[in-house]
Length: 181
Image 1 (tube, rainbow, N blue to C red):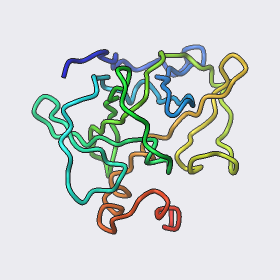
Image 2 (image 1 turned 120 degrees about the vertical axis):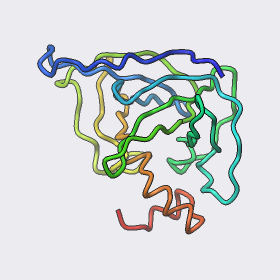
Image 3 (image 1 turned 180 degrees about the vertical axis):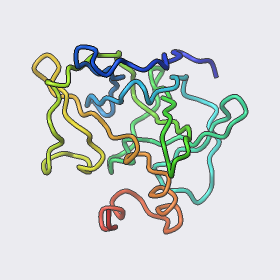
C-alpha cells in the first residue's frame, strides 16, 4: 500500500487570519470534512484483514508500517448502507486521542476532494436536529460557495471506547442510538 498523500503535520498559528484547514471528502454523495491536523496520510484501499465478531462498521485492520490500524466504514457508522469500493475509494489515516493516548484509525471514504481553508466566521454550530447523523458526530457546518459541508468531530465518530462497547454487545449503529451518550 503506497501513500497517496502525506499530510503536513504543522500547527497553524492560532491568530492566522482565523482560518482552519480541512480535508474534504465524499460519502454517499455528501461532502464531509475533517480538520487537517488530525490527518496523518491517505492511502489506497486494499489489503484489509477482516476480524471476526466486530461491529458491522469495522471493515477490518491494515498493517501500516508494522502497526495494526483498524479501518472504519463511515457510511455504516452513520447508520447507512455501505457503498461499493471503486478505484477512487481510499483510506484516510486519522490520529485520535483516547484517554490521553494517541491512536491511528483508518476511515474508508468514497473519494477525497481537497484541502480547504474555512474561515471560522463561516462555520456554524452543529444542528440539534434534522441531520442524517448523530449530532455529537458533528463539530460544525462549514459554508463553502453557498453550500454546507459537515465538519466531523473525529474523537466522537471514532471513539475507541464506544466502538469497543459496540463490539462487546455485537451492536450496529441503529442499536447504538438507544445507548446513552
